[in-house]
Length: 332
Image (tube, rainbow, N blue to C red; front, side, top):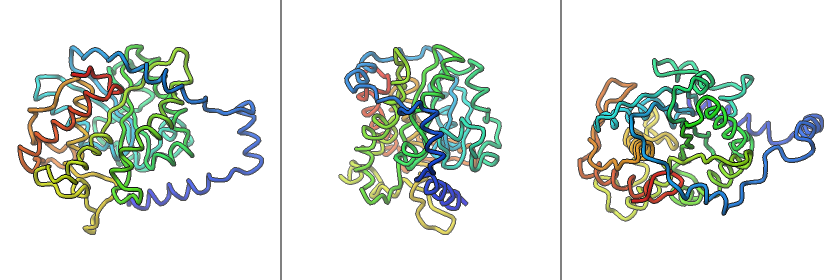
């Protein structure tokens, strides 16, 4: 089913590659014969936005997650459990789909594939109603993958700006984050190579710098750098220093026929993503958190292969998060 949905999305992308003359005239008219998206914010000014970190939250957070199956339903609930292990009351709701670009979450005319299935749970809330409610301390959004197609065909920067603005209209002190995800593990450019390069060329230069250029003065959108954490995990796997992991493919799920799902991570991958969210949202090292979590969707328990591997992954997460100024976490 998921593969059919992605095929349908790709067909839609091909149809969008060429605009007819009438559509082009309408587009030029709507944009006033200039670019719809502003020039990216200058790099020096962009970097300066992140020089002063956020204050660590004093209380538990209520978080809204917007995105697709790389958010899923298990990962946000893992964050809640991690917070509760530290005595923190954490709340969350979400809206997700299958392979969904930000544009589809915003535009009523755009279809959100898998909407009914993926949001059939008590944690669902309509994103527009949620952000207008002022109920949330933090808003976490992500863009569809392939990320370069999202930028090219679905106006990622424009819609990241729209959602950030909507969140701040509802509550001026809300913390806005972009969840940096990943791409197919069998990418011909190399999985680790792309993780290392995509952060700057797509997530920053393709989305954040143009998105922040809409407003004067600009307000930062912080980053939850799961892609960079996975890049470091991949480096450690290649070096043979992670307990029980020998290939990056070990982080990914299997299809029903037993073949490798090259885009969706398994429970261990979700655990890593949740650790990263927890560290960024709460400005706390995840080292020492438990290595077992309940699975929201499956009424089952997931445990990391060993306590040593859990500790290694927790330390990787904290090392990446605390040294990345775009997380808003003070370097320690």
